[in-house]
Amino acid sequence: MPAFDPASIDVSGSVTLVVARRSGHNYIGNRIAMSTDVANDLRQICQETLNAMSQRTAVAYADDLDFDRESHYVLVPSSVLVSHRPQPRRGRRPADDAAEVPQIEVDPGARSVLASASSLDELNARDLKKQSFTFYAAIVGSNPDNRVDFVDQWNPYKAGLSGGIITNFGDRLNRIEGPLLVFERSFDIVVTDAAIAVLDLGAFEGVFRDIDAMVDRRPTWSAAAVAALPLDDGTAELLAELCDRGGRVATQLRGMYERGVFGKAFTATQLRTEMQGQKLDVGRMIVKGKLVLDDADIPVVLKLIDEKLYTGWHSDTPWDVGTRSKRAT
Amino acid sequence: MTEIARRVRLFLGSYVLLFVLLAIRFQTRWLMISCIVIAAIGLLDMLWIVFGVTRKTEAEPIRIADVTDAGSDVAGYLATYLLPFLTVAEPTTRDVIAYMIFLLVTGLVYVRSEMTQINPTLYILGKRVVAITTDKGWSGHLVATSPPHVGDVVQAVSLNALVRVETVPKATPT
Image (cartoon, rainbow over all chains, first blue to last red; front, top):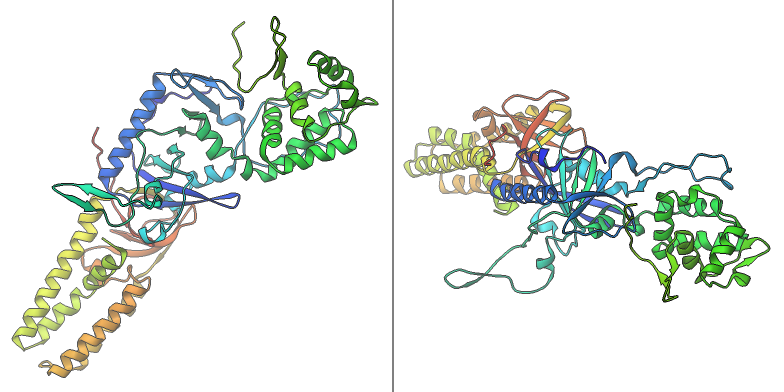
């Protein structure tokens, strides 16, 4: 685990409020000027988020992690984050080639918005229109080189988009004029130089790892799978095509790629044995030592390779695992 | 406060010196008093915007990557001050209407274009205006007590989308 201590983070510095929305595959971020009252409220929420983390135990990230959000938070060390574009491997991995270091891919867009928070264009009330923001963030710290980002996957303009009449109940009901921004009482993610700490895994996936935005990375994942598996040419093309479309197969391949599954070279013999164990149609799926798969087979075989299919030892039920956590041995 | 309202107030503030000069020059009593009142309102409002509002607005750290003095813009703006002096010290009703149209048009241009940083009153208040670019690419104007240097980190608050005012780090309640 990296050096991330929520108790040591100071939230007394300057606060920059940022909202970000999707534009195609990119993020567009804007800064919002705010009064010191609002900044102090945000600081308070930042501190409460850190307190919540201090009361929880850090667990290492995995895309299929099953974690208890009441007692854990997820920690992603900066050292394993990848937001560049490594060259895809050509051909199969040699048997003596060292396995790749586990890595976690993130969309560089969100980090770029957060890094340039103070220099983003300012958002005016008249520019709000019907914008739907993906997230907002409070960037805390007076030193621009050492700020901490508190991110929440929430559209603060949601109330404004609802179309409802917004009123204030003072001595009588009065209509509130102008756009209304509503912020949550906690943040989902804390980003420091050392790590990304996550209280809400869905928010992390949505803000930093939106599969639809990571178009450039898809060929890398599918190429890694093609290199590691004995696929026939048609299946290799189909797999690349399904990955290119995004969605389930791309998410599966990304997770397996990050966890180093494709660091191994799988043989048809290995796969045949395991497929027979899971009662898959081996005769159809393996032809002349190659995997011959259709659209529906590919996610299933990927799950098989990812050790997410198993048979109950007494009920003989063919289980399909979604999330999981590694047990202590 | 809407952006338009803020720009109108900044325009009024930028003409404080002109109204002081006109108050000195006019001999018609009601005109003199009107100019003094407008100048006082403009000055107080400028003081509030530059010092009061900035104190109530959260500052942000920016690192300066490029600085250019914007004083020449202000000098050019001051030239508009000369026009009213072409008329007489005791203006007729027609002269006053002409002054008002002139101010209205100048104000319209000021409010509708990015001229907030062009404000001689800021200089009177001991501030300077510099055009800056930050290391992350924001370009605009900074109102500062002294011009920053390249590489300096400045704590600044937003006056509007293109103008920031330097402030000192404030103590934060614990």
